[in-house]
Image 1 (cartoon, rainbow, N blue to C red):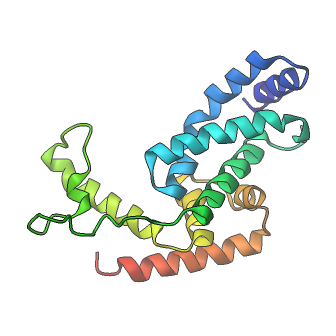
Image 2: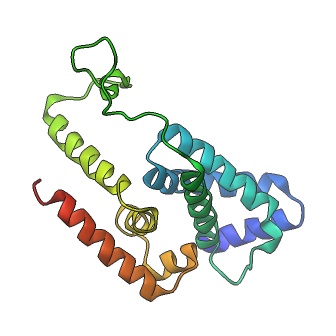
Length: 187
């Protein structure tokens, strides 16, 4: 599959714009998932994924074809997402009480696309709680935890995506896991 992608990239570099559509189609879900796992917001993740592909297309000439395209693309996605987090300041809190209600918080105001079956509620709540705790980690730990355990990337791939040494990746994973373990010890 990597050979097919490299061939498409060669075509894009030669000016074939439609070849990039195939690249986007192949990677769009993975890029979205990386953005979502780091930022935690579906709409922002969609915007960030789109921005990732735009930036990749504009800078395709700087891609070194001797390297893995997915790593280069995931690095762009991760950097764009982390930059957005750095610039973003929370303007509301979901656990804040809604004025004029009897203890309802902003979580109760979120709409759901479809009703959840009763037997899956507990599992979904646990997953949401774990995702929330991941979101509470510092960005440097959040990104490595998401890339390693959610996206199941290797230490070397994470190292290349974040442009940090493998030893630093291992340290951040260890510290991030310890921080998560402390937060989740009562679960």
